[in-house]
Length: 135
Figure 1 (spheres, rainbow, N blue to C red):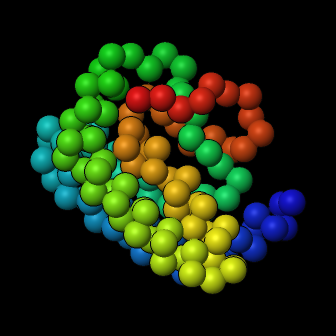
Figure 2: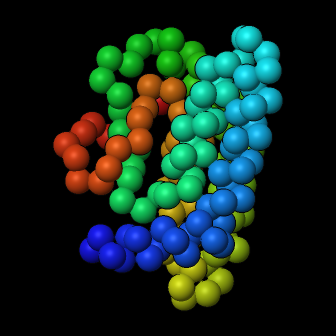
């Protein structure tokens, strides 16, 4: 199973992961220019890391997440979450055209929850005991 994840991650990185991660990094740099939006920049960098190597990892609720993360998620959803979701859906549709692209399309769809609500959640290795993701 580990070998399959490695192969899928390498194919993902070449086909879509590098470009998605680059977009998240650019957004993170732009957000870090302004002091007020640094938390959004840090969230973008976390999502870039996830976009580089998604197989074998998933989103889980961070213990101790509070109402502040909910407020930041609402702001994020209004400003960037919907656009990122549309981008991941479009990427998934493009990848699902071929048989080999179907697992890659699933990885793109798997990133939608983190694109919608990056605060109060963390990216963990699959198989670890965790709570499901939440807003």
